[in-house]
Image (cartoon, rainbow, N blue to C red; front, top):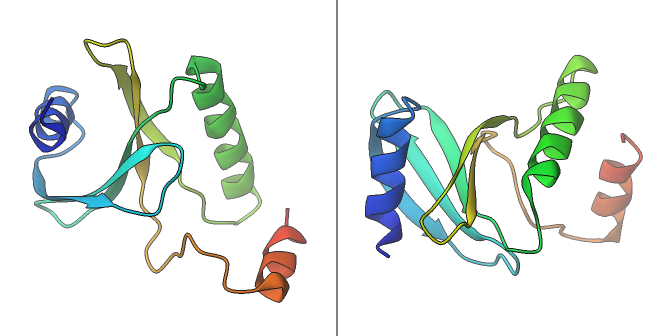
Length: 116
């Protein structure tokens, strides 16, 4: 499967966006992750979800993100999801601008965790 073509096709089919750029992101150990920028410059993160996770996991993510947003935090809210021909889940989340997915040190982790 060509992931870039699949992502482009599905985002258009689901009326999420018309992708301008799709880049694989490295460093993930569980999901295959891609950064998508739409033609109108909106950002998304698209992930092919590891088989250990299911639709309930996506619902849980959506619930947690909505809660965090209600409390004034930015969260990678779930936009949509789909299953591919191999029955693998894919999810689309909003990209948080200027965010990091790496904890630089123990103090940074502590500071981030105390807000939860």
